[in-house]
Image 1 (tube, rainbow, N blue to C red):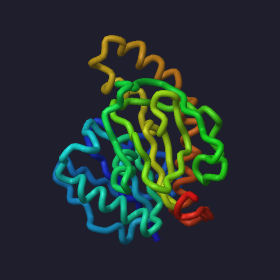
Image 2 (cartoon, rainbow, N blue to C red):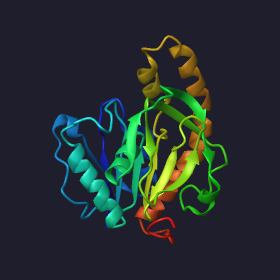
Image 3 (tube, rainbow, N blue to C red):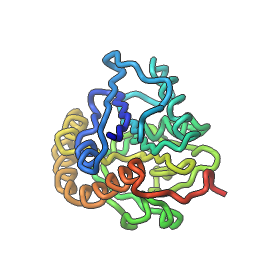
Image 4 (cartoon, rainbow, N blue to C red):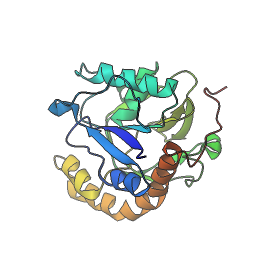
Length: 238
């Protein structure tokens, strides 16, 4: 029987791109919903093996037509232990849906090829445990999670944007950074900035390093969704 992941694409500028390739190669089928084109989101996650929410140009605190339904689905995903991954805006919505706070960052735009630092507690996490101490990531955001939900576990941080990755419950993860982004996608995002050529060149140079870390990460997420790996984590941090 096919195992299907529900993917919500919030904006045409950020599709699942190579993360989708990694997940399908690992055995997941993808059901991509694009609510900005009128796609209806389901009321429940019944029948889905996993849930993935992507980024976008919106702010999590904006009044966007489908955000209430999307946040409801995120709460249900945590409640019913559906393996979930929220990326950038998706991670912010996951945090906000569960009582965290998202605001415009006082540090402004974070953009380009960056490093984040894995926290010690991440060593026991089934997704983040095997990643290196300071993995390469792609950033593009001016909002940030300023307060994590109660009980969330902080898994990765950086100096000016401390909540870079977290887990809430047993099987829901959020990241502030991007892992799905290839050079072409980032070039479209960066086109309006004066230093676009320099930013794009740096991102292009880091693509192999990003793949080396985050393709196995995607494989581990798929393994959890497909029942090949069991999680043995508390539902909430102590």
